Every structure is written in structure tokens, then in C-alpha cells.
Length: 225
Image (cartoon, rainbow, N blue to C red; front, side, top):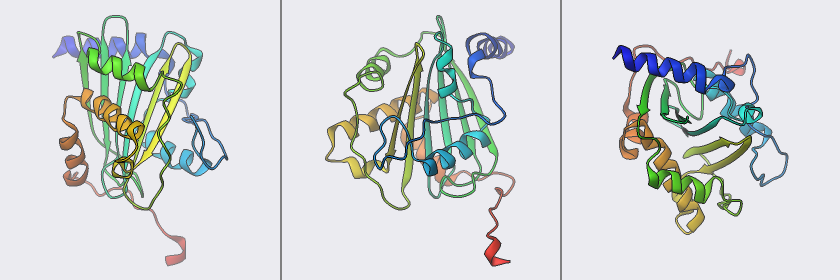
């Protein structure tokens, strides 16, 4: 166990130095276009960033100035459920995976960190996952259709490698059942999430069933006072 802790600490300090926290990091490229590509709306940026800041997650966008950094992150924000992020950092010899779960709701107040787990993959990324990443994140022609709706969940995938950053977002996978690239995005998201060591169905179930010792922070509506 002590050796594992030392290895994780070494990876954080040596392999992830460019991912150090910022007081107010910029997490996403922002665009005012109605269907932004590789960017999110100002509203989406504020929403997603609030959750990642509560998770004490670093900005992958700001890691583009460090060409040696390779990292991927899947973020899951269910409207009524525990927000989750699975961040994978790839180094020469190891793959480090951190999973963070908040106590609040993905569509409302994020709450605070309720659970974190760390994992090291000593054999590197599974070959099928590596190939899937190449087919999607680093394939310039991959762009799922844009669907929007109420409630449901937000799925966010980020990648940074060789100084390049890619971003994909999706609303509720069921909306993409007739979109082949959309379903490929679902497969990619599930593959990144399952690097945490849990199956996707369990991850989603836990987001709706886990309870923590303290109540999440509650957003106060000033008009109600």
C-alpha cells in the first residue's frame, strides 16, 4: 500500500506538473456559436467549470503548453445525481487514474467531494481503449450531432496530447440512438469511465444511490427570502 501511495505521489509530481491547480483556471474554450465545435457556450463553461472546481480537478486546457502531457477526462453530470469525473494521465511507463465524486447534483449545487479513488495501470492503456481514443478524440472528422433537452445528463470528454486539446459534449445518450458517431461517443465515454475499475452501469447506479454523511451545499434562491 505504501509503495502504491509513493507511486501515485510521484506520478502527480513528475508526470502531472502541468496539471497543477490554478486559483481560477479556464477549463474550456468558449464560443458563442449555437453549435460550437471543440468549445462550449458561456453558460456551459460556467456550469461545467463549477463542478470541476469543486472536485479540485486541474484544467486540461491549460496543459496544452506542456507538450509532454497526455491526459483524458470523462465528466458525468446527471441532473439529479452525484457528479463524477474520471481523469486518466498517461506517462511513459504508467497510467494513473483518479475518480472524484461529489455529494450534490449535476444540474444544481455540486456539493463537495464525497469520494475519491486512485488507481495505477502498470501495463498502460488497454489496446482497445487506446485505439478507440485514436478513432475519436484525435480523428479530426469525428463530431457527433448536437442534441439538447431538459434534465437528463451531461457527458463531457476531454483530451490533451502533444500540446493539442479536444473537447466533446453530449446530452443524454438516448438522444443519439440513430447517430452512429453519437453512439461511438457513448462507447468512448464508457471506456474512459471504466478505467476507474468499475463497470459503467455500476458507476451510473452509484451516482443515483450513494448517500454521504453530510448534506450537500444548498443553493439559496434570493427571491424566496
